[in-house]
Figure (spheres, rainbow, N blue to C red):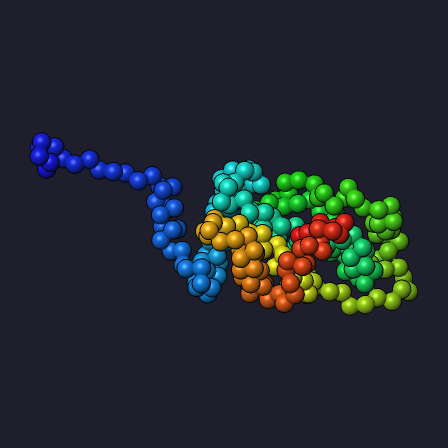
Length: 229
């Protein structure tokens, strides 16, 4: 009871504020690299779960809170990355070695997190006439749908999707790099941009097994005509 005989007011902290306080309470020192990497892993995992929940509740691929936008970009980049090869030339080359999946994936509609198609594949807009002619050969039976080649043509063993992913760890790390930069900038606004990028690269390489420089890879990719991711 107060001096006036009234009960003290109860101060209610909004849920968003409590979430922010809990996040701040678990932020390790900048020098604790292992703890920071673990926290980044947790934040990305929590973000993936929240994005999946939102996509089941609202139209998938819609607007996300600012703190989830970078992770959402990563989630959908992974969907796209698993859905089509990095270049049209790679898809044609794979078809010639009896692996039709990359070429088919360039035509397949983009799926949401539920596995349902929700928009046309943008890759079809840039396919060359030669690639469309190759597709017609498959559709008309001029090329074998199972082998990707004409009768009598030799073919090499096809490469699985897992093998393709295993050969591009730096590509995967580059996708994660911008997400980790976004997380670290929010957690450590006092650190310089260079410190944030260097730490993000270390974490991205550790998460994906990449060895090559992620930042150099990204700079080269921005100069190339192909998209990153």
